[in-house]
Image (cartoon, rainbow, N blue to C red; front, side):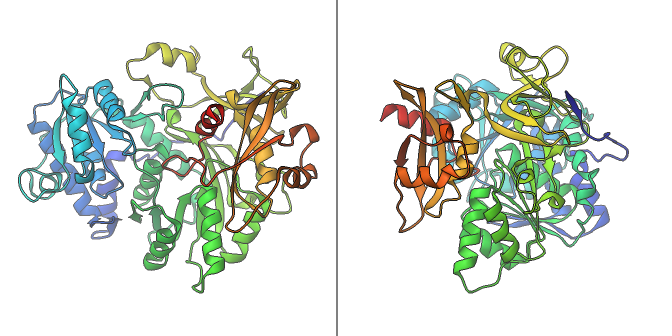
Amino acid sequence: MRLQGPALSLDGMVFINDYPKLAELRYPGRTAIVGDTGALTYRELDEASDRFAGWLRAQDLPVGARVSYLGKNSELMFPVFFGCIRAGAVLVPINWRFAVPEIEHVLADSESQVLVVSPEFADAARSACARLARPPRLLVTEGASGESLRAVLFEGPGPAPWPFNPDAVCLQLYTSGTTGQPKGVLETHRKLSIARWMEVGSPHWADWHGGDVLLSAMPNFHSGGLSWMLIGLLRSVTCILTADPSPANLLALSRKHAVTRTFVVPAVIRTLVEMVEAGTEPAPPLKTIFYGAAPMDVPLIQRCQTLFPGCMFAQYYGMTEVAGSVTFFPPSEHRIDRPERLRSVGALLPGFEMEIRDPQGRPLEAMQPGEIYVRTPTLMLGYWQQPGATAEVIDPDGWYRTGDGGYADADGYLFLTDRVRDMIISGGENIYPVEVEQALRQHPAVQEVVVVGAKDERWGEAVCAVIELRSGQNVTLDELREFARERIAGFKLPRQLRVVDQLPRTATGKLQRGAVRTSLARA
């Protein structure tokens, strides 16, 4: 069975390069980004982007030169991004959580010629550069003396003329590296622009207006965080950008700036709900909470609807290799009277095709689980200088092998099971950890849970639940099993239990199943 999203219309599409200028023409003087250390109007963003483009051209860099950025969320990164596009360069955001050898790998692999770095990571950057045969030129974002990015953006010369090529690579995002060294995903200006335009064509975005205020705490080196900011800039709204993703800070910023839209992961939503429930201040005036990485369970949605009356919820499922989202689960589907549908991650966005395939690559019918394949005009060009790795995931017909497991219902809604490699085979039965986690997460003592397979002499693999407890709570394996027995089949019940102080998470707050599995194997 092949699924197809709505027709994609590119009539009137705005290229990312033009976001600041378009907003300036429509709303002169409107604030574009409020960061932790400063703010930029759309005019200032446009002019600063031109100045950075001019600075890059003055360095006599070749077309396609890589410009790395190492720093936490800051309003200063966006003139760097737009400036790279305008100068024919390629932005390479670096995960600021990386250790020095990982930073060195990205710089060497991308062959970066410029590294923009914030002061707190300058020492790590210098250490990484010292190990390179051809280190990039360092440009610190802030500095009391000498050249700095801030000086370039607000005091530098204007741009040098440069022919604009929409099909040139403009962004090289590195994957998490969970299956080896991080790989550079190549995205062109046109593909990124189409990815953001897809959402404009959806009727679910019709209620956005110029008075909206967007909040972003997702890291900008990540596809989700960068895409969310671009979604706001395309709509010419004010974007509140912070490097502090703590729920307390998100609540404070939401109240201070009257935030109307935000994007977080369900684990953060759960903590926000608990803080509002325990506090005395009213909930912020949110209109929509967008989320990704996992569905929300029914009890959490019920609590959200009570605390945030009138607030809508919408979910994305996507990946770096397709420049963002694949499916969208709209507010209209967040109905607690349809709990089965709430486990879905939505239906295809415009322009996407999808097939669920068996291990031999044959398409499956509705409700049959397999591996998710997608085809889209936003698909990456490939992995930088890795044709073999690219060929492993993109077939000659342009289908991308996601590595995610799932199934589609008769209405075209996608349900995730797990990464294909994460499936647990116990006693010949296939068990999807996500399904077990959804059941265990409803226990009142469980704050968060990751389910993995543990070696077992009798069953081959046994279901192991690794949990964080709520404050002051405790639970036994037998109690968990009895609780879950009413929700899932007996063969899916956990046979082992590990309690940890804190589960490992990515910079976006997503739980790291691979790290849990590795830790369990070492125990």
